[in-house]
Length: 382
Image (cartoon, rainbow, N blue to C red):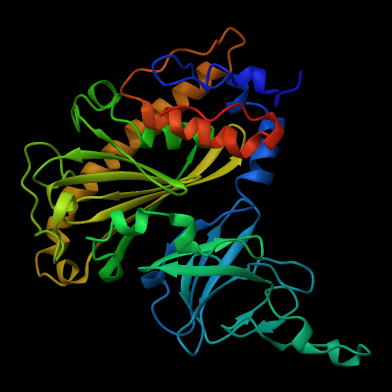
C-alpha cells in the first residue's frame, strides 16, 4: 500500500465538523516516520534552548535533535553558535549536559576545540601531509535567536527565523521573553509517537477527564495564526500555572498588556515545540521523536529575572512545579495509552470533536509537509 496516496487522507482534509483523524499507521509506520524525518525534522527551524542556559563565554548546552546531537556554545565575543556534537576525527560525542569550559577536548584522541568551534589542537596529526587545523573545526549548524529562544535549521538558505515564525512575533509581543530565566528542566522518555504529545498539548477537550482531579476542566478559544505555528487561548484572570484554588505567589511579568494579561496562550511551533505563556511565567515543551513509537519530551520552566531574585522564590516555585509535574505525568500516561490503542489492527479513524480544531490543523500541517505537491488535495477550509 502506498502510504502517501492522498486518497487515504481525504477525510482528514475535510472541514473539522466532517473530518476524521489520521490513520493509525501515521503513528506506527517506520515508512511514514522516515518521511517525517526527511520533510519535517530536517528543514525548517527547530527550538533547542534558551540563551540564558549558556550565559557566559565558554558556556555550553548539549541538546538532542532528530538529525543528531548538537552543542550550543557561547564564544569569547558573546555569540551563540550551534555545532554537531561529534569530533571531526573519529566521531566521538564531545560533551553532555551543560556547563562551562575554556576548551572542548575529545575524550578519544584529545582533539581540542575552542568555544567558537575552531580546532585548536590535534595530537599526532602534525605528521600528516597537508593537514591544516583550519579545515577541521566543528561542523556548524545554522543558528538564530529570537528574544532569548535559540533555534537551529539543518538546511542552508530559506527564510530567516522571524519570517518562519510569522505573526507569532506580533501576537506574543506583550511578553518580556528576553528577560526570562530557565530555572529548571525535566526530561522524559514517552512510549508514544511524537504527534500524540503535540496533539495533546494543543487541545483542552481532554482536561475534564485526564486532569479531572488535578488541573480541572479548561475552556479555550481558537486563535488564528499565520506562519508555522498554531495556538489556543484560555481566558483566565489569574495564572494557570498553579493548581485550581491556589493563589499564584508571584506577580505578572512586567509590562504585560492586552490578551496576555487576561489569559494563557498554548502554542505549537511546528513541528514539535510548545510555548505555554501565562501571566507570571512560561514553560516550554520540546518533543524529539526517537522513532515511530517513542519520543523524548524535554520541558523547561522560565520566570522573569525579577521573580527569580525574590527572597521567596524557592518557596513559591514549588507550587508551580507541583502543578507542572502532576499535569505532565497525566499527559504522558494518556499518550502512552493512545499509542497502545493505535497499535491495534482493529483501529479505524474516528471523528473530530468541535473542540479539537487545532488538532485538526496540526494533522493537516503534517500532511502538507509529508505529501508531495502533486499529491495534496485542495487546502482544507478552516
